[in-house]
Amino acid sequence: IFVQPPNLDVIYEYEFNDETIELIIPTIADKIYQIQNNPEYIYKLTPREFEEVVAEIFLANGYEVTLTQETRDGGKDIIVKQMVMGSPFVLLIECKRYNAKNKVSVNIVRELYGVQTADNVNKALVVTSSFFSKDAIDFAERRGSLMGLVDFDILMQWINSYR
Image (cartoon, rainbow, N blue to C red):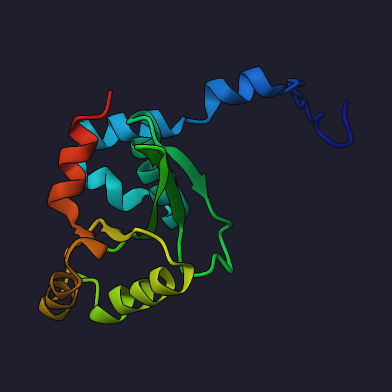
């Protein structure tokens, strides 16, 4: 006779190392493949994962890529470099993982243009999972080759060509 019914617990002990963690946590390439199969998955990414996806696309195309720190990044998320005819070509990228209906405003584009001018680099690019306001498009077009905009449609072309 028990005064209190017995309690049986099972404790599983499992040691995680870098190899087992890599098997569990999806890589950025895995996330890109998920977006290829289901474009809506892009909206499930965190803003940092979105930056990592964009960085990986440039890395896979042979560019030297630096992902800036998450906070106090100086107005740029990614710095892309490539040597062109013996001279460095530098591209600043600002990533905005917005929902489909939230358009990127002209203020974001202006801010990045200011950073580009201050840093004296070749080009700046805003990449979004959404689209751009008419004012943002007009502002970027007036900057010519100094400023580029990559919306959801263009980004999906990049993602679908990723291997």
